[in-house]
Image 1 (tube, rainbow, N blue to C red):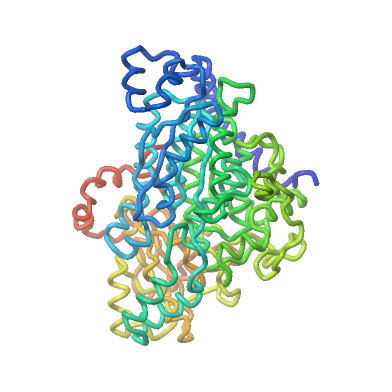
Image 2: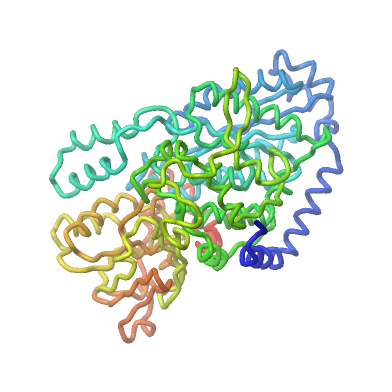
Length: 601
């Protein structure tokens, strides 16, 4: 089916808005490409340093005729999702030799686990780490020795940071290589039940520890549909993975075959061959629109509303919140994966996964098919799934009918008519709410405010029994300039307990929630933030707030609100401990949440 004209209109608007910066970006890309493969310009001493430790590849590198692939890795074993990457460099080098190429680890980037830092001061480094990852990856590629790059990263800030860096080296072809999700463990809804019981004093710490260890139990990505797995979906919809690579489990023959194929493909698409595919040309406005379509169709993580504008800016493209809102209005919700449903990503993959979704969205005209990808021209090749047949990797058509309609639905019979995220505007500024997991009966909350300056104050009030009526809990001074915009996911069990007690509750914050957050209405990323004197800083206890996800409004109904002076807060305690002192100047220079909360643009 032809592309929906409404989608074309949004895409054209983005292209027009971005034309000066995009044209300048593409000019720089072509100038870099015209200088030819970078290794041709290395002096002998430079080259000798680069190749000194490459062992059996040294002669091929010195000859300079084979494609040379740079590996940028986010390996560590703090993140279960990244632990499988420990063995990837050796596998990649061997696969490169088989493909007539060479490969070398260009550098590593930091990768923090939000699951470890959730509710702790380390979380205040989390969002800023995205830009640090981009900077570190830029250092890795500054060796300027590589004909293509292989990017090893999965989790929350890592993929966005790597995409920013890849776009900054837009003349260099880039293939992103995932490692896949861990096997299904304790069901996510049971884990959430135990967390709520613990928050309510109805379960012991031993009960909680057993549940958590049964949920997070091995190598691979956490199985709920949070930011990490939303990233993996995006890499498929934006054409940066090989088709169907995202959700194949680690340490399996198919996963190894896909990794080898990704290396071979990277060797094929360099400037030395006949199919040069620079990543900067793949990352055009159509690719970003396709990514937003995938985000809305799956009810993905709200964090991508921060990350996608920053990723796009690196490629000379300007995204605005209205673009997200307009795409959400025309794309139906087709997936129910925890926290939006009971299924995990392994169940999602078994029901048809990304191949099914891309296929049905293309048939409905809700994706741009005429894009470039690392696999070749056209997004239709991503409506397939990889298989090993007699030991050989091949791709077959993905299902065109859902294999489980409790997890995946067709466009004609969606879970809801519009996407899973909603843009909010009103007297409190701008924000966003994830509605895909919220009961429609709770899409409108009107109640008095209780105002807090950090999440510890909320927890103390809860344990003191302070919440006994319908309440909008406001947690401010949590924006990028105040303390780095941490996720407030550790409040989720408390909010869920209050809701289960029959109260109508909502959260309003200039901070973030985890991609795993779900059933309690939460207006997040409210901007301008309190530390910048935004309207949220004028709120007082008792102010009546109306959060209306159906109309996209976030308003204060109390007379005189707009006439007040904004409150201030002593934020000096945010400037030290757990490395936060190293990030103080970065926080002070961060952009508004509507622009990606970045220090780079």
